[in-house]
Image 1 (cartoon, rainbow, N blue to C red):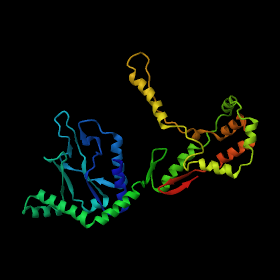
Image 2: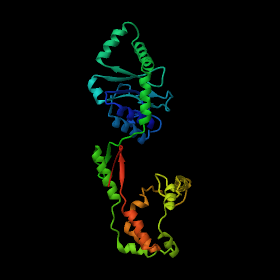
Image 3: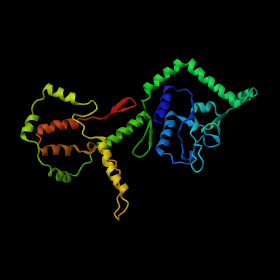
Image 4: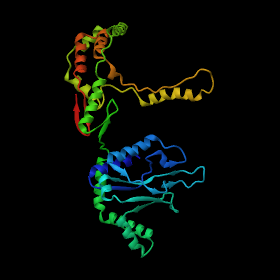
Amino acid sequence: MKETWNLLRCLSHQSTRTWLCVGDFNEIMHHHEKVGGNQRAQWKIEEFRECCLDCELHDLGCRGYPYTWCNKRAEPNTVRARLNRAVCSGSWADMFNTVLVRHEHSAGSDHGVLWWTYYQMERVMHRDADRGNAQEILMNKTRECRVNLLEGNRTDLETLGSRLRISKNKKKIKRLKDERGQLEVGEHQVMKVIIDYFSEVFRSSAPNANAMNKVIDMVESRVTMAMNESLLQLYTSEEVAYALKQMHRYKSLGPDRRLITNNVLLAYKPNHFLAQKQWGKAGHISLKLDVSKAYDRVEWSFHERVLGRIGFHPKVVSTIMLCVKSVTYSFLLNGSQFGF
């Protein structure tokens, strides 16, 4: 469904015109819109809500039967849900503020029928009802509209489709919650939330010197004199070129030995153990903890002292720390770069 929600976001960004979306969204907005079967995952509902919020679309509600879809199975296996709905922009609701949406059963489909009630539409329907069945007339007009769109405006539709394919992955962040849980809206406010968060992440925690000394005293020297002599030699242009060609544009130098499959296997083993344990007095639990990357929490002073303790020459340590301490952080927010 993410592709559908992204498509709606792209459409909302293409134009500021009044618009209305009607049909089968294959998703519910609230848990009470579904009865029977398994409960719908909350994150799927939230994705639909977020999409409507980003597109500034409002649900027009409904009258009559509360559900638009049924799996057509006998009780107790019957599942009903409100999958069909009408959502519109605020300007559309202001223009057609007398519109009402009504649900009705459909004998030939597992989806119900959405009927519109609007005083101008009612006059047209009553006028045409004298010449035949009102529902049949409405369906014929809908088919005629589809034919006209496909034949008369094919070029426009293809152009729109091309633009959507190009820009469908362009997502925008319009709001973020700060550390207090307050929602900040607007580009400058969102930038401030991001900068404040990472400034706090990379700020020194003023570690205890005695505790640091206890750890550093246990580090053994590993770097030999020959290693330092090699590191203190001047860099050649060939060495620089060789190093740069080894680097991926989005990665640091050297092979990445960590595989996501290793994490999966590591998590699977304790979960499998817990699932298989059916008896015994000793209980076990598993905890999922959010752990920041190691680099986010390494104190520069600790880093510098460990390098010296390992045996690196002071000039080598100074060069490494020059690269570490001169770092700047930049972020891309909706195509705009900023940082600190």
